[in-house]
Length: 104
Image 1 (cartoon, rainbow, N blue to C red):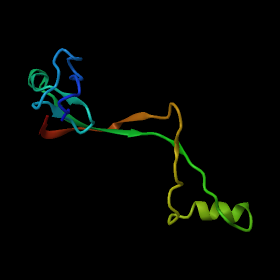
Image 2 (image 1 turned 120 degrees about the vertical axis):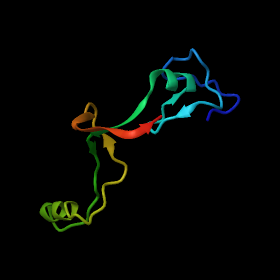
Image 3 (image 1 turned 90 degrees about the vertical axis):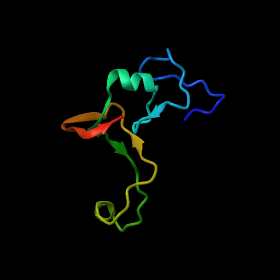
Image 4 (image 1 turned 45 degrees about the vertical axis):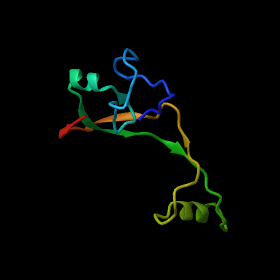
């Protein structure tokens, strides 16, 4: 919930109503006012999405083939501090659903 000194506005009515203690914080971090939730009858949807990241390993090995073998081993942890690859975000429309019985 917003702190008393913060001016946080509803993300649906775009600030027509400043949020108060009755605001609703959604799982996707959107914050809406109670009035908008009632007026728009919002539901919760699970949306599948993918994106790509690039990371780098520093691997000690005898040669490149061995380094690649180590990097592709399923027990090797993911590279630290990956970087998002621009424009790689996609919604997987085959993997979307309304969460039944779950309203805001």
